[in-house]
Length: 197
Image 1 (tube, rainbow, N blue to C red):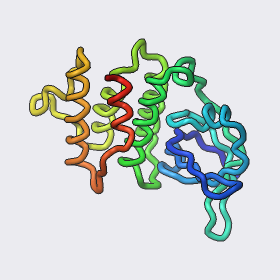
Image 2 (tube, helix red, strand yellow; image 1 turned 45 degrees about the vertical axis):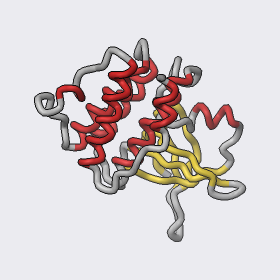
Image 3 (cartoon, rainbow, N blue to C red; image 1 turned 180 degrees about the horizontal axis):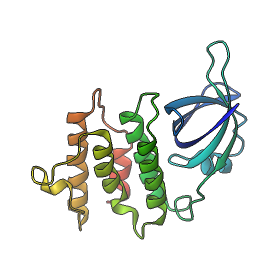
Image 4 (spheres, rainbow, N blue to C red; image 1 turned 60 degrees about the vertical axis):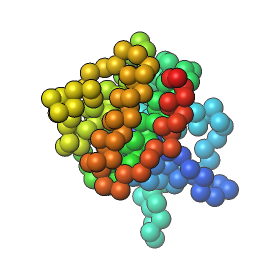
């Protein structure tokens, strides 16, 4: 058994009894776990919601099986994200973005710390409409392809209107596509665009 702090990325059905939990962990970077008995939809929406910051107690897998989550506890209890559809949509988008860009099981504590701060920023920001943009800019720096403000002046200044926001998001996704191997369009992008339209 071991414990690790983690940021929830996705929970997928695996069988009648089990789910596969994808997370970004402090201990080993990107990881997948078996999860039995998830419980009620309310519990899934809390502890296992995308972009939740949790502590996982895990039993090592045997015979090539994935490790199994024995217990999950929220380390940060959001006051707004769980009830604000806009913040939930940003959380979904950022979880998918992280899944696309951080695919290796490699420990990176500075990256984990950055993402943990982003979880709190999403919940605590007075308005969430630019949180995903700030997070993308900072994540690019963490990944080693920081955005040069002189070459891309529109990508580093927070937008003030809906049109500017949508254009900046489009350009940031194009920038990521140039720098991330095997980049593919984010399925949550259309939802995010619609929710802030």
